[in-house]
Image (cartoon, rainbow, N blue to C red; front, side, top):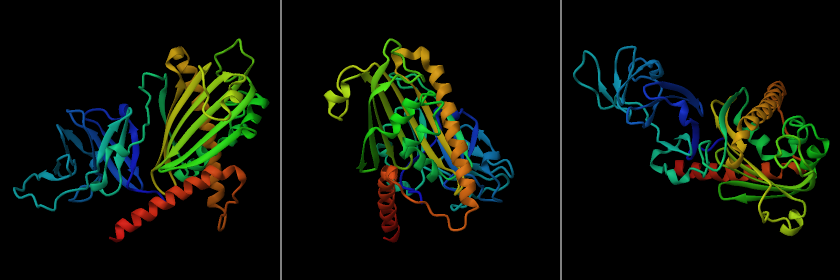
Length: 350
């Protein structure tokens, strides 16, 4: 269901402290993360070769990781370099070491063939420390599969209902704008791009900074990229910008901009984690806390709905979903993923 030859977000950079072990399950594989004194993050299969005890219950010793069951010492490449009470270390005494990259304030892990790991394939994620934005990072864990979160992010028409009192600010007109927008969706090499224009919208009470303006043209664009990366920029412009731009990306100085970078990482078949950062442009950094609270409220609204959806799916015999017109981006992304999975299958067969 999920491609493996790609970079999954394992966490924000601040989640990995030097000398501390961070246990995680990604795509069903138990992994022990730790940061060395040289600041490098290491990811090892979370089971000792001796008695399969979890290495995440171990101890960091410099750049190495010691199993605290019988004391085997593992190097960052996964090889055992010391066995207490035994001089000979068998060559096969090793665990899998995963390629790791640290970029855009995040730690990324390659779950597929390590020979294919290329850091240039990491999307331009931006991250919460980027100087252009004032964002607070967060994480939510879901009792639901990553695929349902993907569907949610690919179709933002649900803002009119799920987020009526958060992103729509309690405004019926703002909520309706997400349903009646001028929308376009296109396939990218590694995902989907969706753009919406909402012309002559009443100012949304949720966070708009141009308080002397009552009506705006709103433009938003988001890319949803494999294996679950969501990047959205939302601009508020003076009325008339939509007409001048003729539905293309807006020209001229916006009144206000917000940005969000998000990543969905499958943990198991039925669980996932959702990383997010959301906030205004840096020139209004004093509003960072407002948007952090607004985003967390909205993202929890998604979680409640999606987990309820998953519970219903789990109790439905032969569950089938009926596609609607609003699912265009969902279907486009499914096509991109299926192509990627076919490519991986061919590589595996060679």
